[in-house]
Structures are given as C-alpha cells and as structure tokens.
Length: 183
Ligand SMILES: [Zn+2]
Image (tube, rainbow, N blue to C red; front, top):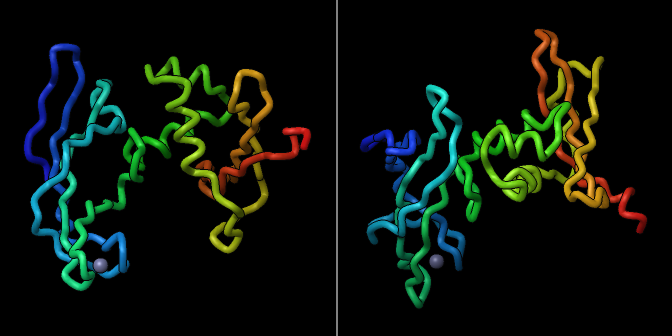
C-alpha cells in the first residue's frame, strides 16, 4: 500500500509504503505471530528507477510479540520483497544482476550511481548452492558470465543464464566460483 510519494530536491523519487502483511515468524520458536506491537525504524531501500529517477522505497516493518514463548520476545517482520540487512529491494537486486551480464561491477556501479560494494552485495545475496535444472525449459543456449568480485580478481562469481524460446534471457543461478581462488 502506497502511503505517499515525493520527489526530493535532488531529484530522487521517494515512495513511502506499508506492507499488508500482518504476521511475523517468531525468532525463537518459529511460529507465526500477529503483529500488533507497532513499527520498527524506517528502512530506506533503493528500488528500480521510475521515470529515470533514482527511486527509493521507504517503509517501517511491523513488530510482533510471541505469546507462546515464555519471555514473549518481539520479532520484526520480514517481507518477501526485502532481504534483511540489504540496502536494496529484491527487485533491484535482480535488476543489478541482469545489468552485470556482459558487463563489469565497475560499469554497473557507475551507471547506477551506487557503490562498488553495493553491486557485490547484490551479487552475493543471490548466490545459490546449486541450479534447479527442473525449472528450465530450454537449455540450447547457456551463458556463463564470470564476474570478478574484487579488483585483485581473486574472487569470482559466475552468472549462469539461458536464452528462453522467446529470446528472453533468464538467470538460472549465481555460483561462487572457488576454483580461481587457488585453494
Ligand atoms: Zn515464539
């Protein structure tokens, strides 16, 4: 739900939203708990650009209290479109990953006006232990893009892509490439 949006003096678009999700998972017992303890601190996340403007989504996560745990601990809710501690929405992370195909971290960092580490962070958050091949309908064209994570080129990640029937590039997985570490 959008509460309000504004364009700041430095031409950024800020969109204030509130999640419709009314539950959280208790950090202790993992049970689903209701959120009726107010809101946590405001979180500002970089999101996909709108009308060519740097766009941020701003929200305050809801807080729930577990009545089944003895100490009645409070837990901040986690929403599906934001990984905890990430400065980006999930959609923006995925967008950055697509930008990295046939490109470099430096280029993406410059183009998006975000830090080098922010791009590496987006990449690292999407590293998966393996590829789920069952989800893939067309393996005729597999692409492997190796991305150097550090300027010393010691750490690599590999972005595995496939071209689907309609020509759309789909990201299969991001794999940490340990072979080049020399270990
Ligand atoms: Zn609990």
